[in-house]
Image (cartoon, rainbow, N blue to C red; front, side, top):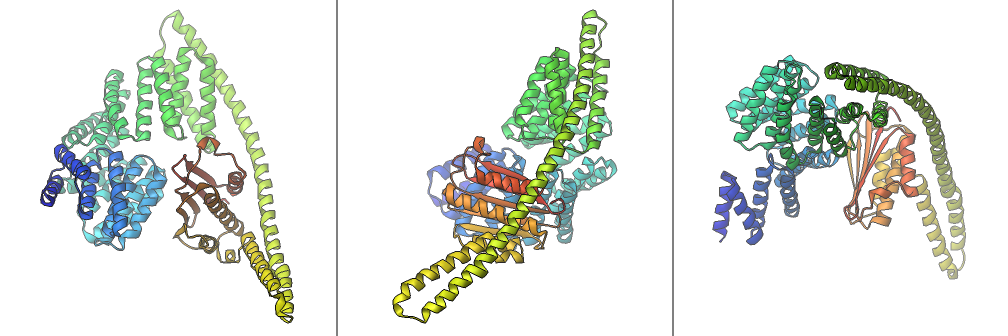
Length: 613
């Protein structure tokens, strides 16, 4: 029987076709396999679904990782960590992706191909930084990967690094450098017969030509992308090619919104199956724009609202574009109040950026209004009436914008006053804690020790009194340590590590450079870690609590996660403990993000800028 199983595994490894994959799944469910056979099966299934279905790939990778942990197999632990991190990144869950990629980086030192494995992890980390719009850090990691690839003369690694660096240059509209790197990547991809990488290259080159408004060349590469992706069932890039074609047909040269809508409607079901919320939201936003071009304003409003639901946590370009579609659609539909409301929301988002961005975006919005007006004017009395309504609404919106800006200025002033007050309270707390800790340790603890010495000189009948005094002294020392730990004088990393060492279920990890920073910031990070761990121990029933501290020259990030009972996110703002943590973080201009749901544990992520604190 085992020989048959091994044959099936070998067939799947060689072909990975649909029938063999089904056979492999059946073997996993119905046959008794050795640990080696199981982990190999999980590896094959993960690799098969890598490009086609991120959720399925993630499911099998997590099973493989769990088995690799039991076997203490560093090679497989590295490989499955990379796969899990990659799939989480594709699903837009970047924090979890980075956790697993950091794990993979830890395992690389114990793997056979340590250097090339590190380069692969650096490439994935660079992708995450790129997704978070941190292009400087992204380029740094891509270059790290390329240095290793060139040193080893590893063609696949060189190919990945070249494609990624080309994409970075493309994103900042450095077209010449982007085309140069894509050209180098094409030669290697053709040499390796790496069709999947060719899809990535064709997509990038098509985007470059589209940015340069060379739409004929853009269409040529987009069609080549779709054909190539179909040949290897690479559905992600097949859909991206269709979306790119739709954008091109929306350009001024064509204005063929009917053709654009057809391509978008073909791409959406594929993207929805893949489950990347950002890609789905961006494509639906494009669909809304196409409906505007076709004059189907109600459908434009409906699809824009759908995009807003998917992209509800984003405040970037997708959401701003979607709000623009809603504004224009409601102007054409005669819904002045709705248009004003959406414009107000639009201004709120823009105010999160600097004044320069706000004015540039407002100018762009006005330009769009003028363009819409010129393109849609019709020589009929009815349309003139709608045009007057539109102009009136635009005037109201501009007045509303001025009111919002003034209101925002006053609100910022109030927030600044509140922030100063909060900082004063926290500084007072730190000083008071230090004073109490000194008093407890130096005065009361010392007096009790003196009493104990005096008692030692008397009869043994007072032994129980001495024992009670010993307990009191220990308790006072613990209280003093908790108020202001002595270890904090050596830095927050030492203090947090000292604190969590009391609890066997709490695990501490530190990454980065261990440098001393502002005393108030170190104290705040320690207090947050203390309170978060204490909350997990008291309320969550967690068996494992992970505390991770990451520090570099600019930022400090504290992450506390547990596998406890979690809680309902609707009540996330309730409770004095969490409010105290939020106040502490706000006082240092930091960010806090809590992810939880009943039965699925809790993860709290705190980000602080060392310079802005």
